[in-house]
Every structure is written in C-alpha cells, then in structure tokens.
Image (cartoon, rainbow, N blue to C red; front, top):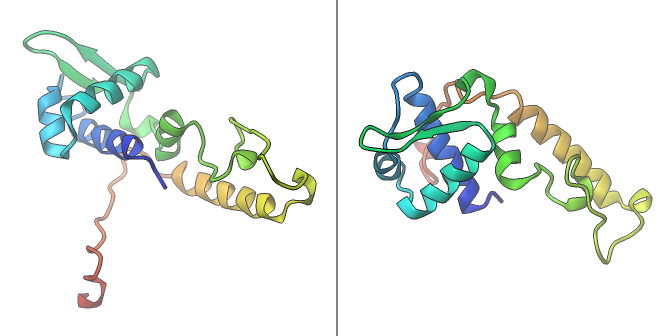
Length: 147
C-alpha cells in the first residue's frame, strides 16, 4: 500500500498540475483543497523541492509550483521519489534492491519471480500516465452496482 505521505504528495502534485502556469500556489490553498495537514504538507513539498519537481517562493506572494511541466512527470516517477521503489518487496526493486531476510536464495524464490512481474506491470502502467493526463474518477465503494 502507498503510505499516507505518498498519497498526500500525489494529491498535492495533482493540485499543482491543475494550477500549472498560474504562478505560486499558497500552501494553505493546497492543504485546504486536498485535505492535507499543513505541517505535513510543508515537509512533503520541501522533499519534492529537493528533488526538483516543485519550486517555491517565500513571502506574501509566495507559494509552490511545479518545477517541471506536468507532461514530464509520470506517476511512476512521483511514487519512486516518495517511496524509493515501485516494488512490493525489497528483492524485486530495480533501484533499491535488498536481499530479503529469512527467505530463499533469490534464484529459487518463486515469490520474488512473481513480484518482479508485478513490479514490471506496475511500472509499465504508472510510467505511462503523466501528471498532465486526465484521470477519470471512479465510483465510491459500494456505488459500482448503481451504474
């Protein structure tokens, strides 16, 4: 599962993508619109600024904006920035690989083989969707039968 921090980061980035080219967006606007605690959002936006995907300006007319065009940011990139990996287990990570503790040899582990397939399918999907792409809203849980 995605951490709360990663989910907040995605929502904040979606908000900034919606406002792309309109100048700095105040932190309070993002926090209120996306229902993110302001103090936590400050930490998240600082981290995204260090990675270069968000820029900021202090002061009365300050705020945050995307540091690169939303067409140049994929959801895969964003999740990797926040999580370090798309893999569900450390032994299946391409960029943050670690040998699992209390496991079989990697060459003998069918779970790892499965998780490599899951990682590749997830990467293919998330790397194909850009922050600029429209996302169609899904029905709320329990509403699927009302379509």
